Image (cartoon, rainbow, N blue to C red; front, side, top):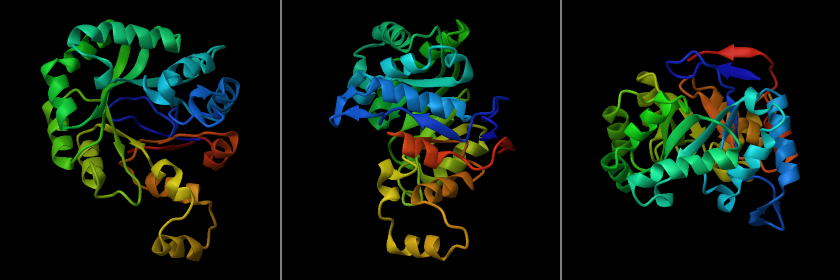
Length: 275
């Protein structure tokens, strides 16, 4: 596995993170996860060097955090940093932050959340969470030792992203949608570089566009991949494109089966990259 420095901190996360939004399902039912297989593939990823696990309360119709909690039993919790999110549409007032967070601790069977994010920030949600002093709430969790790193995930235009980054000097990390087809959408490459220049670690989601880039990339892209002397799977090309950018800290992959976990496994062991 390869590792990179996490923003201004000394922690070194794996460049491949396990995204737990698309865990294995039974009968293609998002609300009915295959818990045994989910636990197996999460632990396999951890056994092969992944130390960044990402989930959220809404994922898998509310079941992802529960299954992640089960996967991290038996000593696995101590091997990883765990990321989850304060979700706007799951709280109706700032007075509900505390009970929402406690519910996450219970579902995840843990005493702390290593990385805690404002979830899915856009203009509307950011304005609401700013008014509700959500950052101050998370700072309180940090002071109590219940959270280590504060960040936000993002879905809006670059101008909003820049506003959020500039609003608070304490951001440790952000999570953005980014892949070789989405360099100008949402935060885009401008957001990636802007955050990294300020020492904010950048975690990538939708690096393979929800798996679409593993099926049929545009013809121009296919010609580039096909002409390369090194042959890789479509998933590996998409991930390598991201990892070749030093501003990228972690790339999340929403792996749904063991084949995907094995395919995404990095070939070079114990190599350390720094931003």
